[in-house]
Length: 139
Image 1 (cartoon, rainbow, N blue to C red):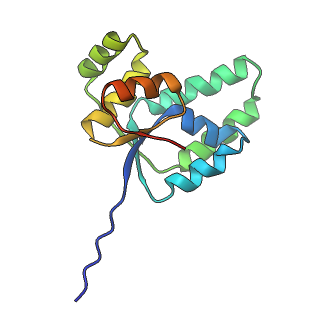
Image 2 (image 1 turned 90 degrees about the horizontal axis):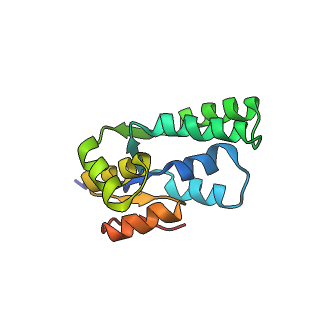
């Protein structure tokens, strides 16, 4: 009898990556989709609110229309991201230590708690991840 073990790579996916995938038409979009196919993507439970905030900002800045945003939300809801709770105290300590936004600290804390890499296009977030010895997946 043969036993096959399938190892699924687990990564925290940042809002910057999701926004590229759901609403833009840049070249890196398909690369990101292909590179994360079959992976266990996780994110702090705040991800949905951060996505909503980013999309509403795009409408406010006239970079997207209402219909673009509604389509983006439908696409986002199809992405298999497992939302998890994170230690808010630990995240806020991280935010204070690095002078970053809480949303970014939630992503980093999520990576720390789940002992996995983070996928992000945000250079500031990646810089803090490296400082905290969190593995960053580059695409």
